Each structure stands twice: as structure tokens, then as C-alpha cells.
Length: 250
Image (cartoon, rainbow, N blue to C red):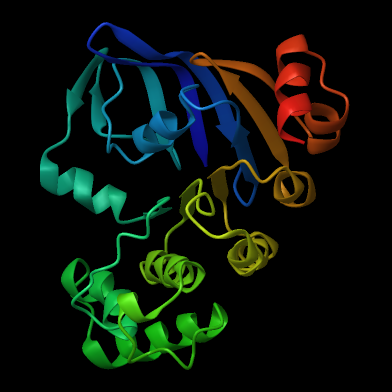
């Protein structure tokens, strides 16, 4: 589903990604772990072209992200084409980014109605079903400021799912939540993983990574330091830098 080869990204003189190689199979869950500033969130944003890569190639479901190849040359896609491909990739941010002036139901309906021009009736039914799936069937008429952080994040997940994505990206989705609210969001994500959704999750929740991930990738200083099954990377890491990081966070 996702294939990164030699992906590089710089902000001015600061090189944030220094040649990332990663592959994520269809239906797999990959968890990215590592210290702040290691490039995890930047890499996630490159996958849906919120950030443009400066080198290497990045493809989702066999299609280059943000570019079209003609012979040996890459041509950047027009904004309309980028938006069309981005619509197939759901993303959940640290902060929930809900529309404050819209109800919970209208937030979830927004993407299909505005981007896909879907009919209102089926869209409303689907939105209600998704909110029930994330445990918020009783909050359809509420507004974001009437919800807890955990509830808002579950609305954000439902909103991303309403676009019927083939890939879900999660950028530290529990980092802004009070500890007692984290479990509800992680339960929704576990349900998604069990349903076969392809997911890439930047997280500091090591218990979630150990339980749900097919692959755990430890990044540091713009590099992939170590990658493998959770039992390998989290329990018996081969690299000293990974061991040092885990000793501080576990």
C-alpha cells in the first residue's frame, strides 16, 4: 500500500528526513516510534503530500504521491489532482481540527458532501453509522466545544472514515488527551485495525504498538534505525539507540 524509497525532506538547511525506506502492506498496521524531532510526523505528512519530498520516491497503492512520472522525469501534479488523491487517505491529527461551527453529524458529513459531491441522504445515514461505530451515537447534534477531547478525537476518526479511505494516517492521536480519555480512542483504532484497515500510526503508546502493530519502526534523527515485529523491536531491540529510547519511555 505504501512504498518509500530514499525519501528526503529538508526545511531550509535542516534535513529532517535523510533517506527513508519503508514498505507497508495492504491491511497492515505500522507504528512509528521515536523521540520528538526524529522526523516521524514529517514523514506522515509527506505520505499525503501535505509536505513535498525533496528526494526519493513515495507511492501509495502503486501511484506516486504528488507526482506523475514521464520517462525519467517527475512532474508535479496540479492542486486538483493532489486533492483527489489525498481524498483517499484519511488523516487524524494530534489536535482534532473539527469545524467548530458544525455539529458532530455535519462534521462527519462534510468531506463526502463537499469533496465527493455525494447525495445528502445516504451521506447522513453513513455518518450516523460511523458515529455509532465510534461510540457517539448520542452526540449527533452536539458541537465540538460540548465534547471531551477523547470524544472530539473519535469524531475526527469518524470524519476521516466517511471518505472511505484506503489508508489511515494517525499523527500521535492521543498525545493531546487526558490520560483517562486515551483508552476510548485506542479502542476505536484497535477496532479499525481488526477490520483490516491499512494504518500508519505515529505514537508514544507502546502498549498499543505491541498489541496492534504488524511492524514497529524506530526513527531517530531522520533515519530508520530499526524495523521489525513488535516482539523484536520493543522487547529485544538490536540497536543500542532503540534500547536507550525504550528504557526512558517504558
